[in-house]
Image (cartoon, rainbow, N blue to C red; front, side, top):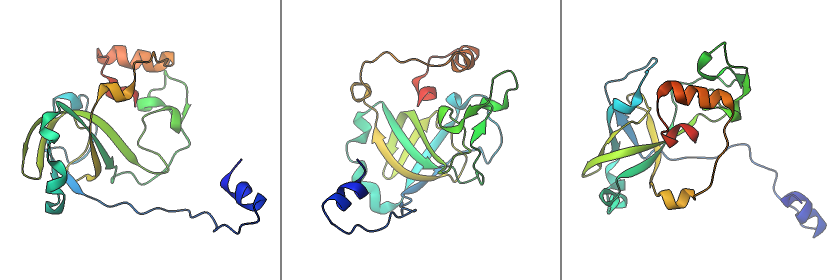
Length: 174
């Protein structure tokens, strides 16, 4: 039962659903990739530069080998309800939510990356699939235990893409 129905059932007047949220940009990505297609983000070194006010929030992050970076794909300006993964004509069209396409209603990206070092509010990472100046929304430590030890199922087209990349890197499964 939705909140509206629960509230109505109790005779409460509920506010109308808001169609927007506010997020705070906490920093930006710095690297040598201004835009375009990149075949292998795994070798790209980047800096996640947080605003100075968030420096205390990084205390202890260097104890982790990997982190999750949540970012806003600022160069995306359209939503597509269906896409061909990686633009490939040999793969059937899929719904946006069944792919990692950037063409989403909310272009939020997430990447698990290797943390190389921290110096003040700057995190040096490798494998972050972001362009230079991408806004960063959040950072979390990567903890494999949090992800659970479950067997996952993926469609054949995604398995094919992963095999072509010659990797089982879990960041492609988010």
